[in-house]
Length: 255
Image (cartoon, rainbow, N blue to C red):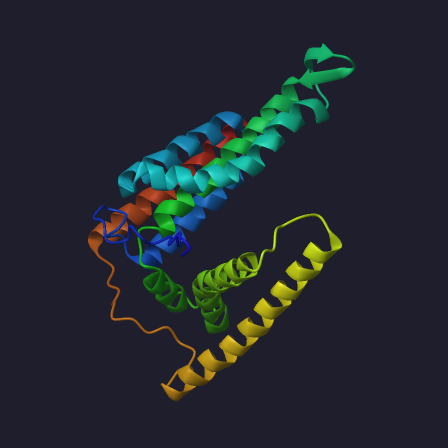
């Protein structure tokens, strides 16, 4: 069976971020993410990264869990950091065989890497410290269109369902002696398997839809959780928003 990477598997832990009201958590963390992503100074972006690490530590999420998600984003960030020093014009630091490394390129590559890492790290305490259903309910309370919320819910859950379906189909194909090769026969077999998966997905979606309608589905998220803003939520919200504002005030003074 597939190992489901449930993003909210540690939502039952206890920390200031776990106790943070999901509505305030979504608004304030998104504000801080956009604040850091819009920074244009490397030193301030580094401060943003340290801030992200601070909130990750405050959430008490396991380091292994965080690194597991960060490493996939790093695969896309590292190429930018490597290429930028050779493609951005500026003051030459080092040159070899017609290629030159520029100071501006290194700075720009570092800026992109720092901002991207900060955003990814902040997303973890934002969504991994609240049960997925509660976060979706919080989005509804924040007036996010219900159709978008429902699409997020079904997409998240059925990615794993279809993954398991594909795993069963793949085992059945392999049990008949199929081996993955770069041949026309192998490509045809894969195409048929994927087509069958789409057909099964469509049929399953119809069955699920009619089953939900028969049980009173109205298109709105229902959970037992009730939200109530506390004084601690207001204090933490003020802290997070203040950090984002201060970073940009400093940037305006420096620029």
